[in-house]
Amino acid sequence: MNAEERRSDPNARVSICGVEVDAVGEAEALGHIEAMVDERRPHLMVVVNASKLTLAAENARLRDVIRRADLVTADGMSVVWGARLLGARLPGRVTGIDTMERLVARAAERGWGVYFLGARQEAVEGAVSVLKARHPSLRVAGLRNGYFKGREREVVDEIHAACPDLLFVAMGSPAQEFFMDEHFDALGVPFSLGVGGSFDHVAGISRRAPVWMQRVGLEWFHRLASEPRRLWRRYVFGNAKFLRMLLEERRSRLRR
Image (cartoon, rainbow, N blue to C red; front, side, top):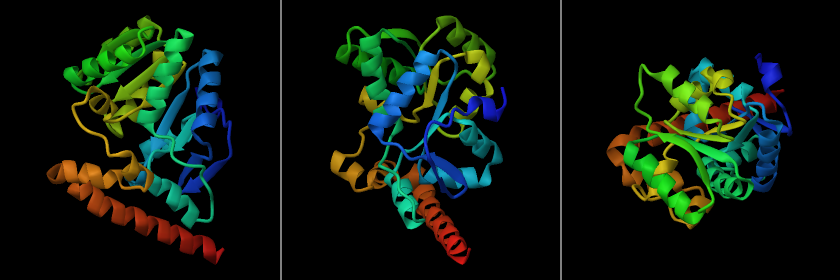
């Protein structure tokens, strides 16, 4: 299926550093997703933050995946602020983890089957246990950890056979986006979304930033403080690069 056939283009999009982001809020995004599930054909959603936008600037394959996605939303406040700096407006964040949790609640109401793929075994099992406790009627179509290198075809066949309505993939970027895009047709899932470290957060293995930090755009700082050795390069150099990209794009637009 080519990019034009895959892209449903339900909304106006805002261009940020070469990536088109849908100008939707949470409620509107969820409405689009529900319509996607009801269509019964495969759809893909990608959430973007500063880190993913800087990665996409260097990675043509990731840019192509995002371009083909049916829905692209701002996972971080940095993207919302970046849009404002460029003279555009995004209604707010529509994050992967929040979208996943809201969709799980909707799945329990509508009887949708959900497949959870990725992270360590304790994380995916823990997340499913927590979500089942919150939503006893949730139908879990299957779960599997993210350690299956060399057995991708087996995993794809397993998910396809389970016939889930929703697929959440927690493998980090860009691995999760590449997996969902490469196997888009073979998976055949009505709605797929990469959710990064969400299983660890839901399972209680790692703590998400307090709500006030999320609202003021400091969730990245909470992550950095939690894992400084692993993340300092990503956030110190990555955030500086994102700001430089934004300023260069702003100057370019002002010269037109």
